[in-house]
Length: 620
Figure (cartoon, rainbow, N blue to C red):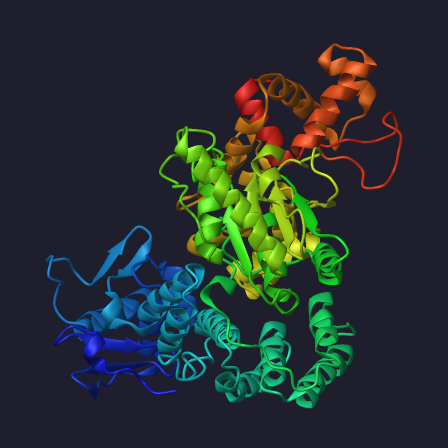
């Protein structure tokens, strides 16, 4: 991989690179960076650009075992050297390296640091893919990858602190490479990715998504025997190293390749990408849910059932699961996979005219005269607008009858929002995500998402804060994920906060989450708020259901409640209590046992964070 020209930096500015050995260039000439300890300080500051880096973190990076008494004074010398290297204050007159209560902060622009440029190009590439512009996405992602020269900071990895940051950077690079390779395969250009994927799999043999992309690129290039051999090598490696089998998704990919000879995928039109028009709040890589993912793949992959409803509370990871499944089902739906959100950003339902218009644009359905601008009317306006909406609905049904596509209808508020969108004939399938269970839809296959198991939640937390930090205090990490109630969004927000607040011990943060009066205040990271997401689900409930949930939340603190206790708390009879509890189960606000059990014997639960929010609103 070749380095981009230094013209990305302003004239006279130093250009730093971390995606390989630590280097600095000025006008094309490499600059000396001083002794090793000075380079460790510079690498640590650059790996967290525009973010305060605590003095303790810098100290650990330079002296991991036994820092000298003069450590702080020595750090000041190394930071002064970094200031000199960076040059004078910026155009706004601000110092480039400043010291505050949070530590040292290095101010640097995107054009001066390869990791910032890398992130910007990766985001632009994913946004292009979301719009269906796969060619543009491939170009932008490739441009990002051209900045990657090898293992990041490979000359300083003997420092544990720098090695941890370098590992995070390498994981980002690998994810972008996987995105790029999968995009090239979607475009019908698998051969361009084969060699690079082989090299990366050799360096990261247990990274499943890399191996799956390598298998797919070989298969789509007509090299089926080699693709199947890649899977067999992986299966043996997993058994030997971990005592495990490949994941259900990997096994499903292998089965889909059997017996297909040299069949290669045709180039995909833009509409064949799953459209993440409004990505889920969770941003981490997909984690856990192996049973639910396998169930979706089996149901929609075999073609016996055409509608799957995935339900669960806000933040349960429904959208992430649906998008992962849609990606793995690409071969089963040759006419495309599209995703449309059925709510607006404020949580209100979109009208049918808006949704049909977007589906029309994504799938090339003719006659999309219904304009999403007519959002004030339930059906897109009166008179001619209603006729236009009806015409587009008919065109959409006709398109589905002639194609085999997968439609993801994300965040559906109620049955009425999607009834007219489901295929009445043909081979199209629909994957629906919803907070409630949409009991009025039939026939459908239903999957209710439970809380993450402890192991899955810890894996997600570890991806965000680093495996080393997780291992340092596993008991506190377990308290954190349990205080989050196993809700993926809450676990991820905790991880994002801890990734920024690196000085904060896990045990102290666990104490904060254990406090019922403070937990929701702690679960905020930037513009992602668990309270906001739960509030959206609260707004879906009828006034009576909100009151009931507030009363039942008090019962749930001991780990669950029976129907008798619910009737006592609600001050009503048995029949009324059954109806009240089951109404909340339908809405996704109360969970019930997975197996069959009588209503009296069942132990019902209110998810912890939902219960805390209900306490806030109802004053129970």
